[in-house]
Image 1 (tube, helix red, strand yellow):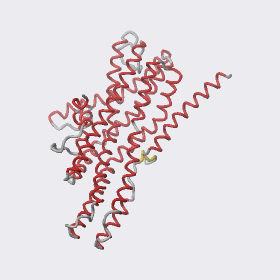
Image 2 (spheres, rainbow, N blue to C red):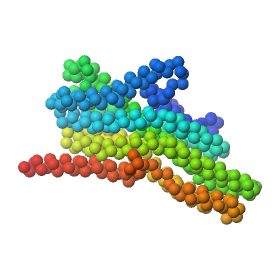
Image 3 (cartoon, rainbow, N blue to C red):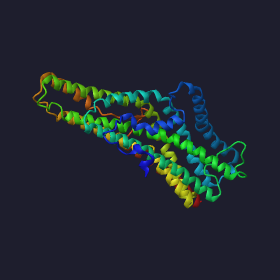
Image 4 (tube, helix red, strand yellow):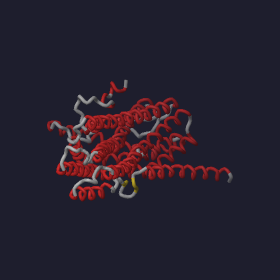
Length: 397
C-alpha cells in the first residue's frame, strides 16, 4: 500500500536506469516546496524567491518568536502541563531554525556532491553493482518516508490530545486572533504552522542520513573491487595497475564527497547535540509530573522523534568507520604477492591512506558517533534527577 503512494521506496528492477542522485527525490521535492533549491525556470525566479522568503521568515523566525511572546503576555494562563509541552517544542524550534538555515546555505555543496555521485555511478557497470545502488537508493527514500510518517504522527497525536482536553497544544501567539474566543480557529492554524516547521526539521534530519547512505553504498562497491584486484589471469600487469589506479581514484572521489558535506552536517549535528539533552530532559519532566494519558502519548512520540534526529546518523557514522577498516583489510588480502614492484609500491601508499577512517565531527568538537549520542542522552537523565531531588527537598521542608 505504502509503496503505491511512494514507489521509490522499493528497489527498482535492473531494467530501469537508476542513479545515486535518485536517493534524494522526495527530499528534493519538499526542499523545493520551501524554497531551499533554485528553480529551474528563470521566468519564475522572482516569484519563487518571494515565496521562499515569506515561508522561511514565517516558520523559522516569526513562529519561534510567537511562542516566546506567548510566555511574556499570557504566562499566568499556562498550566504546568501546557508550559512544559510548549517549552520543549519552543527550544527545539530555535534549534530547528539554525539547522534549516545551514542546510539552505549548503545547497551548492549538495549540488557538487551529486555530481561526484554521478562519477561514482560510471564505475557501476555490473548487475551486482547496479543492484546495490538500487537498494541503497530505495533505502534512502524509505528513510524519508518513515521520518515523514513519524514526525507527522507526533504533530497529529499531540494536537489531537490537547484538542480533546480543550487547550492548545503549543500556545502560539497569533496576532488578531484571541486564543480563547477563537479556540478552534487558532488550534487549526497551530496545526498548519507546526506541520510546516516539522517538515522543514525533517529535511535537515533526513539529508545527512540519505547522503551518507549513498557514501556507504559506494564504499561497499569499492571494497568488492579491492577484493578482486590482481585476480584475473587474463589481464597483464599494466591492466592490473590500471585497476588499482581506478580504485584509488574512487576512494578519492568518496573522500571529496564526504568533505563537501562535512561543513554542513558538522553544524547541524552540533546544534542537535546541544539541544538533545535539554529537550529530552524537559520532555521527561513533562511526562513524569504534568502529563495525562493523551498528552503523555504525544510527548512520548516527541521523545522518539528527537532521538531519531541523531541516533540513526550516529549509528551510520559508526558503521562507516568500520567500513573504512574493512577497506584496508580487503586491499591487504587481495592477490598482490606476485605483482610488480610498481604495483606493490602503489598498493602500500593506497593502504596507508585507507587506514585513515572517515570521522565526522559536530562543530569540530564532538565526534559524531554512538558514544557521543549516548552521552548527550545521559544529560537528559541528569536534568530529571536534579528536578526530582529538588522536589523531594521541598517535600521534606
